[in-house]
Structure formats: C-alpha cells, structure tokens
Figure: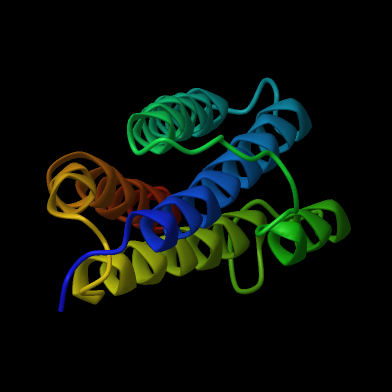
Length: 147
C-alpha cells in the first residue's frame, strides 16, 4: 500500500495533540507535587513530551500540513490526577500517568503498523518518540517501586 500524505498529516496531528496533552498533564503534576522528590522526574518527562511535540509539529509542516493544538487526549488522566491525593499506590497519580504513557505507546505502535504513514514519520516514531515513551513508563515504574 502506498503512503498517503494527507492521512499521515492527520495521524501525526493526532499524535501531536496527545503529546501536547501530556505536556499539560505533566505540568499540572509537577505543580501539584512541587517539593516532592519525584517532581524533578515528572519535569524531565514533561520536557520530553515538549520535545516530542516540537518534533511532531515540524514533521507535520515538512509533510505540508498545519500542526493542530486542540483536544485533550489525556483528559481522563488529568481528571484522575486532580481527584487523587495519593502520589503512589493503586489508582494513584503515578498509576494514572503510567496509563497515559501506555496510551501514547499504543498510538505510536499503531502508527508504525499503518501502511499509510510515510517512512520518514515512522523512522522518527521508531527511533525518537517511542523509545522516549518506553523510558517514561520505566521511570514511572521505578518511582512506584521505590516507595
């Protein structure tokens, strides 16, 4: 199957919206847990999502599209983060952040399997974006285990 540029722009914009949502969610988590030792780890993950968003926006432009900034793919994570007072444990803030990262991982994996996504976009996802998300998941798991 031949890649479809317009379709690829839509896929990359959806990934971009997810990264922008993650940035906002982690910014909120950092603010909520300021002074906690984990705030630095959460801030580093927020920065990674920011870099991913910049990279995806550039990719959309390279494909001839316009980057989008709408929606909140992490809405359920942000809502749950607001509702929990627990940083660790079952259904904790860290648990909800892990669920958000897993959602992003699945979106990236789906894009890699999609024949309509162009090879340059797949390479960026495979070599840069997906490894960062896998690292985030491992970092959050280490935080949970440290408690």
